[in-house]
Amino acid sequence: MTAKGKFRRPEQVPAKRLGVTQVGLFVVLIVVFFFIFFYTVIPWATAEFVVPLFRPSSDKLAKIGFIQFKGLVWASTTKEKAGEIIKQGRIEIAKDLINREFIFDFTFEKRTEEVHGYAKDPDEFYVKSEVIGEHAIILQPWIGFWILALDLAFFAVS
Image (cartoon, rainbow, N blue to C red):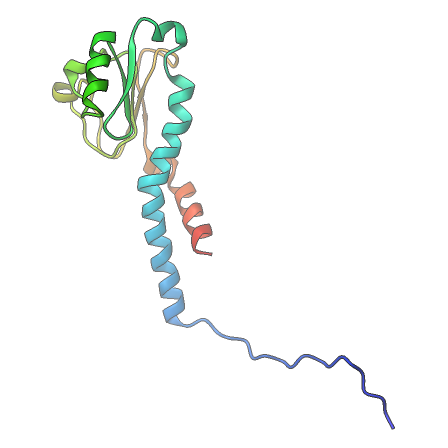
């Protein structure tokens, strides 16, 4: 007679193979999440990092106004204009509202010198601050942030 143990060998479960449908759905989800992260999370995260780092100092803020306009756009203005703009709520940035010392634009919108007071293409972020020099820095998110957006999308789907 042989004794039977309490433990049994687990039955082998056949491995499931990935099909075209699963791979296709995975790729579609990666692409969708990539664009969601690229057009929402990346501009927001860049603004959250750059604006506090290069915004006007407290001494400078005593002399000028620094406000957020519609979208992810911040700019310096006079104290009087800042009060008027704050009363109106977040409005579109315009040339006559800013003094061009500090400008932070993390939107995917085209800006022109005639209308907005500075020029940028829709595929660029614009950063101008006396802290970083007198010339603006142009960030190109398609060059600098696509890997991060792809990583975020991959981990969100996985």
